[in-house]
Length: 217
Ligand code: AP5
Ligand code: ZN
Image (tube, rainbow, N blue to C red; front, side, top):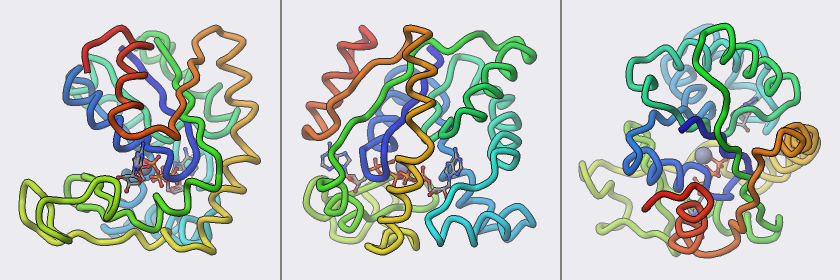
């Protein structure tokens, strides 16, 4: 399977991508996570991305495409992949198709649109806690860790993302709405777009994915 997950901040892309990765043995490429790694490492690319991310804007197509191309070459992506948070612009969607063709990877099998009304997203984003090393995500109310503020598997402390603040969220939402519609239209025309009601609970969204992809999740 070669999957793309599209949806606003807090729509549950990362949460559901990790279920898909584990059950289907696919590699999970979240451009947000790749960028946060570059920021943490303090690379040139990371320095450039940091400013944009903290302001809730979109990092340049060129940077993001470079990261995706590099990571799709990882051996664990041979089986298939889940792109989480990419593409988010029409340019990225077109370039992704070119890349899949020129690198002989094969076309996308499905694009899932995680639709959630904006009003629900604030609570999800402000209650989120993450384990940076693994990307595991929790929520103080909707998906609490076994021990408060600690990762279930490693026991290490959880942190909040620096862009998970009310004022930055408003900008991230605006960036999402401004750039994503053409991407959805692009995939709709190709007949590979599926709508997911991501306002439902985590298990209910998981169930919808299982039906759309005809897999046992
Ligand atoms: P990115 O990391 O992709 O952030 P985002 O798109 O804002 O999405 P989030 O990670 O916030 O949300 P999610 O959908 O993964 O939700 P999650 O599963 O964690 O990007 C960050 C930044 O990087 C961007 O702003 C941009 O600057 C840059 N960037 C990234 N990709 C780019 C690109 N392609 N081009 C240009 N720039 C790019 O869930 C959220 C919370 O809710 C969690 O606490 C979770 O436990 C909980 N939750 C999940 N599902 C449910 C549910 N169904 N019910 C209740 N709670 C739930
Ligand atoms: Zn995410």
